[in-house]
Amino acid sequence: MFKTIVFDLDMTLCYPTERFDDVFNTVFGTTLESVMPTWMEKVSINGACTGIEAIESCFPERDRKEKEALFSAFAQRWAEVQTLYHGVHSLPDRLREQYQCRVGIMTNGPSVFQHSVIEALGLNKTFDFWYSSGDASIALRKPNKALIKLLEQKERIDPASALFIGDTLEKDIAPAIACGWSGLHVNPTDSTTEPISFSSFEKLMDTGRCVSVNWSQLS
Image (cartoon, rainbow, N blue to C red; front, side, top):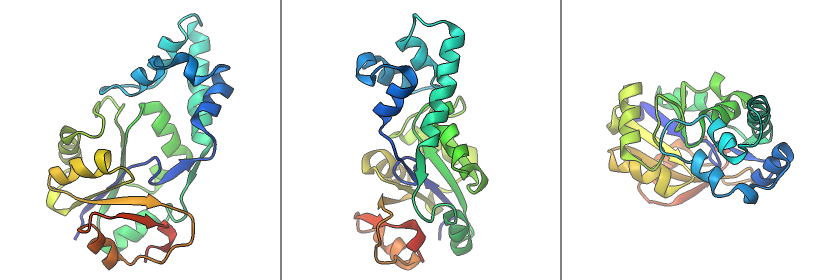
């Protein structure tokens, strides 16, 4: 049924064990609030972005070496506080076995920050492809039908046999469906839930429901 399944990253495959604001304060020695909205403007641009741009704009008084050190420290620290939902490591192989498909990731965010998370969690070893909106080769943020079309081109995806899975209906699901994909809106959890079979998994797409799913219990 599916030849390509693409996942969102944050709050779909993983979640932070510390608040973003606390990590920011630890690394930069100041509150995120003190540099808003400059930080958000730079990290959420609809274009190529590594993350260093936000640091350069928020802390212009610091020299380049210090800014580069902060950039590296923040990317590492933010990656360290991420935890996978149960079952994510085995999920790609289980989906490949069921559908003989390719499994990828498409996430919003600065390229270095997001790729640091993907690598720290080992997702680059289990998924077939992974992209961040800040990648120079992508440079588009969800929600965006042009982004879906770019993924189709880059990964030779047939929309009729593609599925996008994410925790945000507006950003993840709606653009994919508008481009002819299937979409599944999920609320991942590590709490015990009734096992969801692959047949139910497929039927739920047509209901428009947000599915509470423990990935380890997908059968």
